[in-house]
Length: 231
Image (cartoon, rainbow, N blue to C red):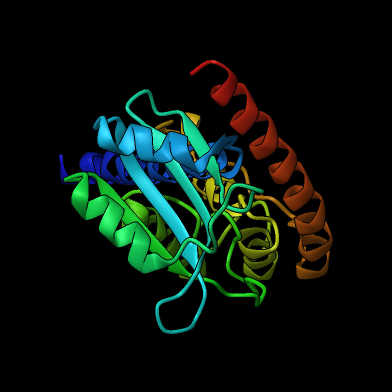
């Protein structure tokens, strides 16, 4: 009984991690392609209680200026405020945003992020923009997947190849959970998987990660626009 439950538990963990990462990717894609709207629309939605999430990008100074402001309404539709127009009285400061949020009695999720002009490095670019308080769950799922990969003996590619697919490839963690050590759809088969002699090397994985990252970006763009158009 115990021997049977171990593979089932492993598949369950993989499924939970995959669903968490896919959910985070969907949230990131949707928030990355918001429709443009006047700042007055934000204030109108805020006062009427239709705003569920606010994400503000601010600078690294005292009483910083808000450089980007996006919000999601109750229909899960994302909007980007037009902060600089001919009618703008001046920069929209974080202190003004805090006052507007307080005056409206906002009870949703407010995510204020410090502007960082540096690149993401090896960290997948879609992880940090995941909005909502679920960001830590998505990051935790990614880190757990990475630890599982580093402690395993993959069949389709070696660990260095998977490392590049995890990082530069953006969605390598999802592929790893679906494919390693055997495809998730056949993980409970009684017969062990055949041994592979031609695993992807680290160099090949590095090259493949560039293509995977490009495809992942196109997919995120398409999903973000497709979902936004139907909300």
